[in-house]
Image (cartoon, rainbow, N blue to C red; front, side):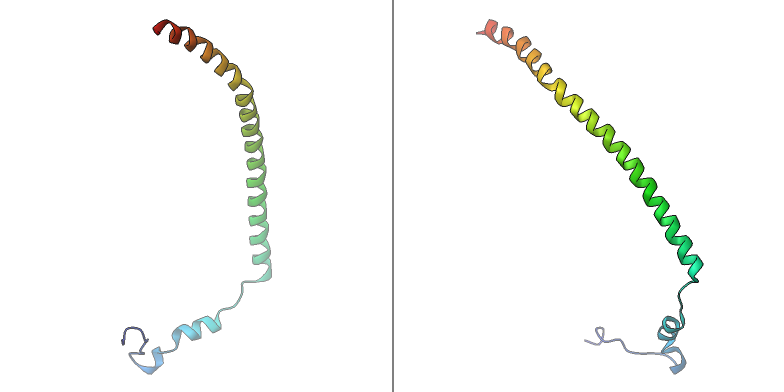
Length: 88
């Protein structure tokens, strides 16, 4: 059961290095944060624009396919029906 409980091993000066590191860490300067968010925003807008263009192409292709599909099915049935009657 000892593996569930973290036991501190080694010299006493090593025991709190993670806590000291986390507490001494600070946020980056405000301009760095602002530049980061501007870059993320521009990447997101670029993705949205290309995504919307791709969606428009997909919708047009789907509409065209759904427009042509009934005609193709009618020709397919007309082509298959004489063959089905002749085999009877």
